[in-house]
Amino acid sequence: MNVTIEKVSDYDVEKLKDFFLNSLTKSRKFKNQKKVLLKPNLLQASPPDKAITTHPLFIKGVVLALLELDSSIEILIGDSPGANFINYNRVLERTGMLDIINEFNISPVKIEEYPPKIYNGLLLSSIVEHVDCIINLAKLKTHSLTGLTLCVKNLFGLIPGNYKVKYHKDYPVNKELGVNIAKIYEFLKNKTISFIDGILAHEGEGPSRGRANKLGIVGFSDDAEVLDMAITKLLGLPPEFCKTNIYFIDKVDNIEDCLPQNLKINGIKLPISTKIDFLPNWLKKFVADSIKVKPEIMKSDCIKCYLCYKSCPVEAISLDNDKFPVVNKNDCIECYCCYEVCESDAIRLKRSLLHRLYVR
Ligand code: SF4
Ligand code: SF4
Image 1 (cartoon, helix red, strand yellow):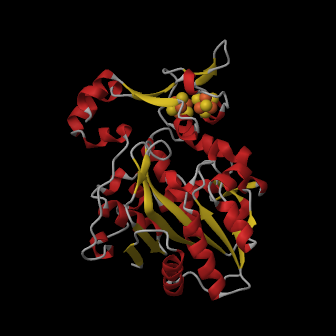
Image 2 (image 1 turned 120 degrees about the vertical axis):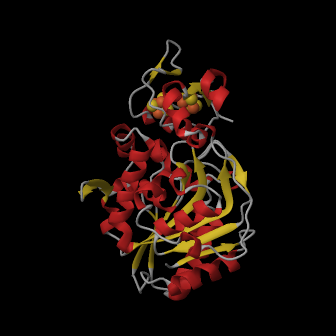
Image 3 (image 1 turned 180 degrees about the horizontal axis):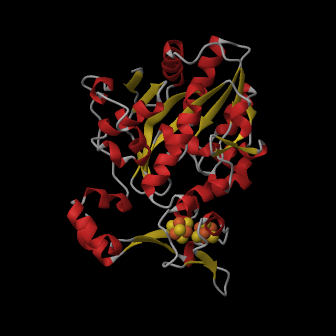
């Protein structure tokens, strides 16, 4: 299995270029493609030091490597940032992507401008058939719903705008969502090569409400699922903690062989909502219905942008008389889409009494 994980302590562009050059040269899938899509994680309009989005210097490293291999290659870059897709230009600017786009004259693409199509029963932007290769540039982050968001999960951004919300509605259980995202990757696997930016990772209440952690690693593989399982193992977590791994657990063996010798990394703080995974099964069964973590909107910080309202898959958010959003806790399926998209830190997660009692 072709997996590289290396210690890289900072965003030194020359070192990153060498890492990408070595990886692309040994890739069994990257062979003189003429048109490639760079698919970073551009979840929201936040600056690179928050580690919510793939770092622009990581992107610069891959662009330099691609141009060195073939100066005539056509490079596109794009993602669909959840409910934020309406403010896409702001996302490109705040994440530092616009600087890279301007410096190298790359074409930014809006995933929503390529009409969605059904492929093997999966709804995706038709951008996927307009490129020869997808270079998947994921950010290493914790995730309140799926445990971790790594390379396989990063391809969820190829579902246009609000269609992502439908996935959350159709697959409200985190394992089901993980399996269906894994199927998207499986469909795109032949034309996808994957990298992960874990130099500045995102820990705690990920994918957007946590904090940066200087984890200092980067990874590459032709097989995103293998890289994800190797990273999960390296973090000291069981494979099923990352819900997009579950589909592949029986298909990937000997993951230890993919880990570099003597590579030690610090641990990563996990989202509070995922800690229920570590309770004994008998206890989970007994108290599952009472161990809840629900979002709560803090009016004092809310700027009434309504991104949360638009991103709720089950319409569990309504507006009160003063036009502030309010969560109806009985309807909420704990997908945390609202929490993920709020850029004003106006949503907090409130734990039920039993959650506070049992989950540490
Ligand atoms: S809670 Fe956040 S996302 Fe929702 S309207 Fe207020 S500021 Fe916007
Ligand atoms: S209120 Fe938030 S967490 Fe609950 S279902 Fe809606 S988007 Fe998901």
